[in-house]
Length: 105
Image (cartoon, rainbow, N blue to C red; front, top):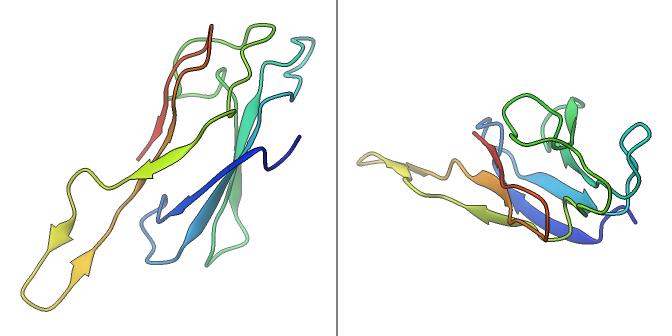
C-alpha cells in the first residue's frame, strides 16, 4: 500500500519540502513484500524509488522485509548563519523485522 507511512523533509537539500512515502508490501522483482520508499521532491519533478537493493541503502531485499513500513525525518545538524537556518533533513526507514535502515543524505 503506497503511503502506508509518510514523512516530510528537505531530503535533496534544495530548500523545498519533499515527501517520503512507504510501500511495505511492494514486491521488488520476484521478492514478495520486500517493501519500498518513494521520495517525491517538492520543487522538482524528479523523484526516487528506493528499495533495500538501491545503492546507499544497505542490505538487500528479502521476502517479508516490509521496508518502508515506518518512516521518520531528522535533522541531525542544521546549518545556521546569522541570517538563516537551513534544515537539511535525512529520511530514515527504521528497521522492521528482517530489514535494515535507509539513510539518504
